[in-house]
Image (cartoon, rainbow, N blue to C red):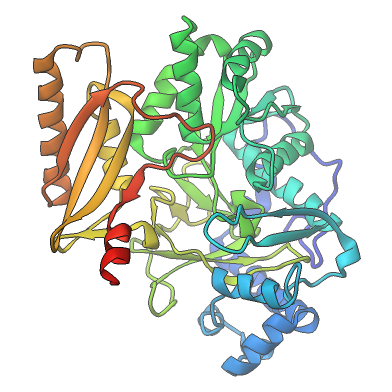
Length: 469
């Protein structure tokens, strides 16, 4: 297998011929069983390294009666206890700033990133110099598989902050040899400036979130600019579900005239493009020789069969600073065996990551995911670009309402608006199996996001506070 060793080593000068489909042809197209032999050996190496350097893992595995030498098969590996985000936060609270799962001296940390901390203590990511190189090389591989080449300009239209996605896209572009355009996002008036710059520079590639790509197109069109003028050939995304939702993908591809690629897992799992779509556009591939991915039953944490739904569990195969070993994601996906039409023999997530277990809400006995509602409403003729999902409680009964913007084009009169509302209500009821109250609101009612869209309002939280539930 090309350049595969522990600790990871890369030839930073290597770039494939531009007409070569695969960055590492042998690794990416080999028989999965042959690759699994090497992955299993790497899992043992990573576990031995973590056990030696991280009290967090020694304590956890000793308590579970797990020894590295016991892991001889993937079934053995499934008995290694999962790691949760709550455990990582607790470890950092007790052993600041990086937790006792940091496996390198603090003096060797060269980059600090982290979570926003909006829902609790922020988690700090301490990244060593060698890991920074590994992240760049891994992202270059996946971006190459999308069709990005050294002759391209990559416009990074996402916030440059603690969020790793923007930086990693920049790293991958630079390592691949492309011209990187780290434009950013989030500053007042920046979207209009992005329109101006993209008309001028004609970047071949755009990176951001699906929400922001739609917002950028909206701003361009409001100013009389067709986003197709930008000349974008490839748009790749992470940070939120959407790129894998067919109706959203169609909207973006139609407005820009380029191809959409989905990617992304968790910030803790950088390189986050260990799940990434390729030129075949057949779903996100689990790049198992970068991060070993299992799709497991949410309760037992045992792997589910191909064709089944579960939650991903991730294990770093190249990180030396804060390696995650069986990190439980809490996301939802369905996986299939490869190969992909592009020739790569990794497992495939045909619908990508389409929700989170803790995002699910139950309405009158039916489990509902926000991504399902988004898929329904964004496919409606006359959809105006944004919506909000409101879950509330009337006495003891939960209720679901969806506010949906209608397009000013073709649905301006009262009769058309009412027809749009009824069509939306019928489509939601048919698919969700629960009555949904739809309110049609004018286009631009809701604020647009330059990062991740926040569309769910659960008013039952206030009810719980009042009644002490």
